[in-house]
Each structure stands twice: as C-alpha cells, then as structure tokens.
Image (cartoon, rainbow, N blue to C red):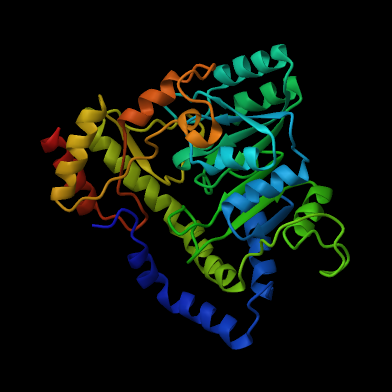
Length: 374
C-alpha cells in the first residue's frame, strides 16, 4: 500500500502526461515555455484571482512574498507553531523575526485568540514591528480566514496564505489561495496538486505585486533579463513541470478533490468512535493533503505505527517537533508564548494513507488494522 499513490495516478494519466512531456522535449522550450503562461492562466482562473506567478518551489514562493513586501530586520511575522519548517524559515531568511503562535487542537490551523495575544504582547514590548501573518492551510483545510481577516485588519497586518497543503480547499465556495493579500502554494510531488519535481506559485489580485513577483523570480529583471533593477532570485518553474501540472490540474478539478473527500468520509465513518478524527468546520472544504488522527499519547502512537508497518500499512508523523523548539530559531524550552496545543499535537498526531486513488478495500484494511492494534 502506498501512502500517496503517485504511481497509480501516473498510470491513469500516462497518455496525456507522456504527450505533454514529449512536446516540451520536441519543442526544446525548457525555460519559460508557452506551457508556463498557460498553466498560470489556468491556476488563476481555478483559484479565482487575477494573477498567478509560478516559481521554482513553494519555499521560494513564500520568500518572494517576503521580498515583495520588504519584510526585514526589526519586523515580526506571526507563524503557526505547528507547521513545516519553511513557513518560519522564510521569515528568518529575510532578517525578520518569526513569532510562533498556537494552533486550534481540532483543525490544526492557527488559533486566532493565540495570535491576537501574541500581537498585543509584541506591540507592548516595542522591540519589533508587527508586519504580517503566515496563515498555513494545514493538511488541506484552509485556515479560519473568517476570523483571521478582522484581526489582521485591526492591527494593520498583511496576510500571507501558505496554501502549500491547502490547494483545492474552500471556505463557503471560495477557493484556497484566494484569501491572503498574497497566497502561495507548492507543487512538491506529494502535495494535493504535485508535479514531478519541485515547483511553486504565488497568487494575488494586485497588478503591482504581480509585476514585482515576475521581476524577482528572474534575478530582479526590468525590461529584459539583462536589465536588473532589484536583487532577485533564480526561481522559474520548468516548462516540463508546467506541462505535467496542466494535465494533473484537469484531473484534480474533475475528480481528484471529490475522490479524496469521499475517502476521508469513509475513514471518519469507521474511525470516529475509535480515535479523534479530523474536524472540518461548517462551510469549509478540505483537499485532504493528509488524513490525520489524534491518539492519546506518544507511546500509543509509536506502538500503533509499528504495528501498522508490520501489516504493510504506511503512516507518517506531521510534525514531531514544534517550530519554537527547532534549534535553528534559537528559542528553546523557555519560549514566552503559550503553545500547549502544538506540543500535544506533536506527540499524538498520526497521518494515514490518503490520495484520490485509495480504494474502499484499502480504507477498510487501514481502519480495521488500526482498530485491532489500539
């Protein structure tokens, strides 16, 4: 059994993907070929924003957003404590200070009460200037932008929607990657919409910001690539990845998101009285990057994960360590902001196999094995 079955997906889409890759090789348009612009148009239309600017990977997308906003030393950027490293790394990389805040124990996304408390504390201390919030759409579920936007507006903060895992999710029919002042996603192969290597994208309705993004991704170019008007990056999406993504986006829209939601419903129907299953609030729709359960403690998780492995069932822990405990950030045990939900989640979460090609038999096998092993 595969944790995320990219091999099966390829077999289903093989003819179209092979044709798309061969066309790129035949035309030899490897860098910024016509497929890149076409993909950007398709992605912007799907998300419902004016502009999509692709780049080399999801981390670069986040970094470009920081550069566009001129986030720098002395600025504070608020980041969920329970997320992948890059969500905070990009803040430190531009010289600013990441302030990690707790998450909701049910949705895994940023807790707005914890966020507001942290904003007030940082403002009162007067050492840093609050500038932005990185709102992560974790495990496929959009962050609670209904509550988050008024808080950001109240304190004059920009919202960067990190939709690396949330692409395809919705709130009241509005698509993920349309909620932030800038939004980003990742096309890492295991993401809801993944390519065959690295890739990323930024989304915005702002014409000026989009122009800056396009400049920064090609060495800060001006009127041409040898006219460099700012310091930028070398961060272009390969044409072959764009061609692959266009094929996969069609399948994603037509049936893959619906398929993972049906799989999640089946998991929950079987497991809801056995373990704590994921929560999707009313009006929200997940793209199920992960199906993540919560167990009682770390020892139970270790025992269960080992037992599942013996039966050929893969599982993963996302994430085993809070961001504020990552050595790179230099905070440690005496971190001054309350993040107890994150600490508990890091000890108790376990992600089960989840992808659009998961069969009913696979789901029943995983669920039945989990019941027996607990």
